[in-house]
Image 1: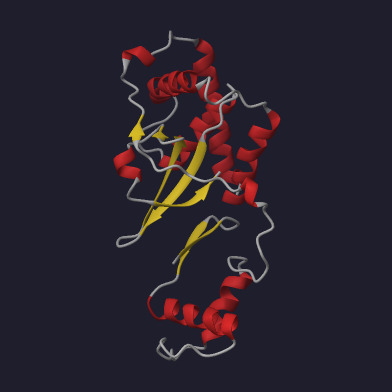
Image 2 (image 1 turned 60 degrees about the horizontal axis):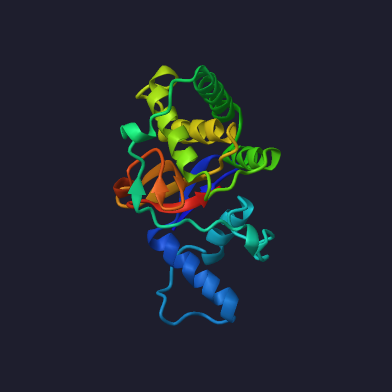
Length: 220
């Protein structure tokens, strides 16, 4: 079981004996009885839950976020081909200025803010700008992403992480009132984390074949 601690910008893994301990403790609290099918664990079973509660990763209360605000991520089925000449827009200096601004804002976010604050900032971008009609502007979004990908070497290097790239793309598109989903996913054995941007079933800044190896843990 992997938790993403947004306030501390780190992952917390619970596995092995701890996972059995946590599962047994949750079952005990929900049923009021010991679970006969779960082997006894030598560690104090409720210490695991207390640790997660203290970090606000586990709660007894129901979620405060209304169900209508929960974003469902579509299965990624295809990727954007930025080399498709039919998507290539004419060079526009405004795109380059918008890209530089997006990368500077992203660098400031990652240097000074937690992932919780960044998620709130991404949601605030949508709140400040009226959203364009997603269906009517699907081609416009693909053209904007193609412009971003082609100009990206002027602002980002190959050493920049996927998180930098994804947040810069989110900010770049927000300037044109386009709001795809920012995703963080994880995998186990071996552990890995990855970030990408997705619109419907289209992965905008990565390959669908690659991101399908990651289980989404955060969708904004």
